[in-house]
Amino acid sequence: MTETSTPVHGTGDDSPVLEIHRLGIRLPDGQAARPILDEVSLRVLPGETVGLVGESGSGKSVACRSVLGLLPDGARISGEVRVADRDVLTMNRTELATLRTRQVAMIFQDPRASLNPLRRVGDFLTEGLRAAGSSAAAALVRAEELLDAVGIRDPRGALRRYPHQFSGGMLQRVVIAAALAAEPALLVADEPTTALDVTTQAEIIAILTRLRSEQGTGLLFVTHDLELASAICDRVYVMYAGRIVETRATDELFDRPRHPYTAGLLACTPRIEPGAPAPRPIPGRPVSLAEAPSGCAFAARCAHAQPRCSEEPPVLARHGDGLAACHRAEEGITL
Image (cartoon, rainbow, N blue to C red):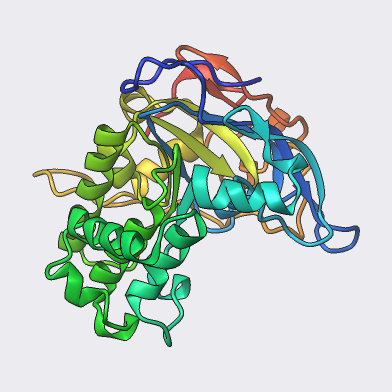
């Protein structure tokens, strides 16, 4: 079942910039007992920020890399990944190159992994612009404008520097500038603030929010930080063991989670309010790719589990204004 709720923010255009429909990714036989992604469906509208949250190993990064056609070697793929109503999974190399340079941009967790340490920042920024047809002079001017837009002081001087001469926060700004060079319709951010201090994190989020508002860019924001997701996302998808287990508008998700895993993630989040309870970790450990539980993948860690949960996988079904994959979703979850 696919999600159909209306975004809080948007441009008035109801056509998704991204629509993933029942995406399945399974490694060759003998390499994994369960799919990396299992019937994953999500969408992002123009001007909307959609969160994808879950613990490490839940499949978040694989899902967002699929948007660029970056898939595991030898994997069996099913479903669709549509960008601007074209299926990425059927594109040839030339079409994928165009997709990656003009329609979709990605910001990775570690900005230093995105740049060649032996090349100047100016070379990194102008390369894509020149490949898109800009002259060397025009590309240089545009690169300087982009650095200024993301808050880099002395952008002209910054173009002549090497990656090691920037702090992590400044380098992430450079990567964001590069991602925005082609004015993409969709921006995929894979935990872009994880390695940054809180102040720099806030500055990066402010930049992304402003650019989304000004340009109407759709943003798929991947994170394990639910507080951060609550601050910037219009809707949130929660992933566990390669599946979407819950999705709904952000406010409703945080006020009344329907899945025990979502409630567990919220209970793990430290709070600074007077009298707030101490964080409570989710017991047990996430399901590995070597394990294939017969029922709900979260049942072994769930305080609400019943015998049925270990035998019958729950279907992602509508509950209220969202979807949840839990046999007891209608009962309400206690944090």
